[in-house]
Amino acid sequence: MAEPNTSHLSIGEVLGLLLEEFPDITISKIRFLESQGLIEPERTPSGYRKFYEHDVELLRVILREQREHFLPLRVIKDRLDAGVIEPSTPPHGSPAPGRADATPSAAAIANHPAAGRNGSAALAVPSTATPSSTERSVPNDPEATPAAIATATNDDSPRLLPGVVVNREELCTMASITAAQLASLEEYGVIGRRKGHGELFTEESVEIAAAAAGLLRAGIDARHLRAYRTSVEREVGLYEQLVMPLLRQRNPQARHNVAAQLGELNELGAKLRSALLRAAVHDQLDL
Image (cartoon, rainbow, N blue to C red; front, top):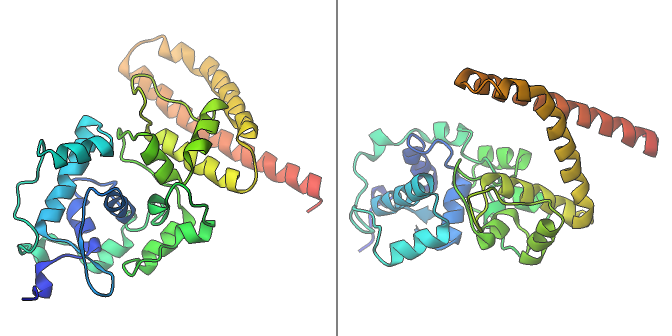
């Protein structure tokens, strides 16, 4: 017998249920977890996802494992399959109690910054694909709201929750690059690994890889991207001279002041680079 429409939730309603505990969760992230086989929501004949209470609790478990134990998705999937970790709610088909009271309005969800942030399609594009920026930004999905599409078009950069790490395959999937391209970016020092994370990559690596992917698709070789790393290293050296006296004070307030000063310097440096680039392009191309 067919289940009543009130027994399941849409992906937007699931987002609303998760936002309080996981402020950085996005529809893109939920789709990505599905593409990696960690969740398997049912589908309506027209292609809409149908989430039940069990699916929501499974998402909570996955996100907590990432946030609290910094586990890559492959490890989390293996632990779920082995029953080492498991949700404690009823299986598919169970009603989602309190739905109307617990879930924000559709308008509130659609207008929330997380609704379409971080590239709705970029997270689900296979690593061998090379879609255009428009194709990556606007998902071919019946659940994509206008607000989500507009936001994704403005910023299609995939991001991780703070502290979450991913393996090579996950990084390639999120950044839409091939394993060979990742190896090339590592060879030329564009992408590195943070100390203490072994073979895993942090949120910064994902953002770097996604940005580099666009330049690679534009025809710029990985070896030429090394110039960006060299420029950043020189800039960091310059900033280091300014903040080292504060760091030597070795107190929490000093470190707070250093963080604030570095944020300001980074913003000013970005503005200067952008202005210099525009001026140079205008001069060279006589625009």
